[in-house]
Image (cartoon, rainbow, N blue to C red; front, side, top):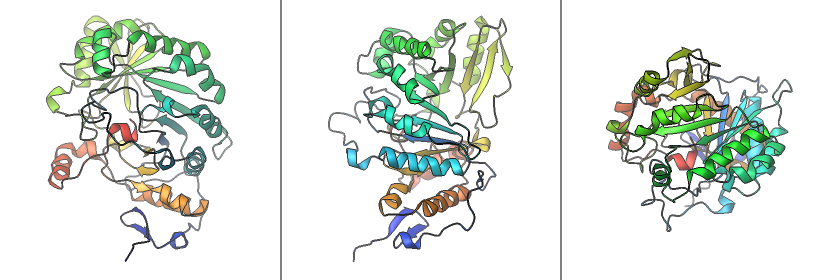
Length: 372
């Protein structure tokens, strides 16, 4: 017998959309999970495709010519994304970040940004709309993105050495074109612009101080990210992680630093500023210094699965509900319940969780599928 049930995720099964419970109360602008963490940030992947094959994210030996990417009709439409965003905002989301894959590969991305910019918070305020990109198309797209309503942009940049950069992106893309894209984004007023460097020992860690030197005194905020065990394809090993404390020590040996208080609760990046007043850096330490206790982020994959942790193995299929005809009230109730049931703290329990996942033969979601 064919199972006609709509599956969101265990234990969310419904015979049809009429079985979905509807919350008696309207969203209050705040929903908290089992560990009292509010929902504040929504990261939405708009495509699983990328024009880079970065060795720590989409290695070419796995994501090759024969890899089966999602078909266009499998992706959430712009209308579906905006609908999800509107409902999430009613539950307290204040920031939306568009990710990928490489989001600038999604045709018409400016149209989506414009649709999201029209969504207002419960008190009538504007959303903080950001986008993470590899910068390849940024020089061409920067003005259109700004005009559409994009607030901020983050560029992934793992080395300033052209040979190292080409080797890491593995498609022989030159560093000069990314730097031009960053300048273009600054010129049109997208900011503050953040530069993210994933640091992997033996691959690019020799460039940490050079990166700091280059961006010191610039309008940009450089952030160093520990090489993470996201997914199962990047060959992660703890020995290849350069702890954030080591990154800070290396930079401080040449450019004295002092720690700065976070900008807001739940900020993932620990801030350090140069003592001479010439800017700041950030370090994101999801391996060596977990920030699970303050995590306020939910992630939606390109085909509409909601993940409550970057290191998850399963998601909640919201696309199936929307395409089965659920109402906004029903979708709102499901989203709120998923968040209330959330108890994830993978990074707090990394060793035990990893062993359990491997023993069960389950794979964590790939970074390219869910975004960073």
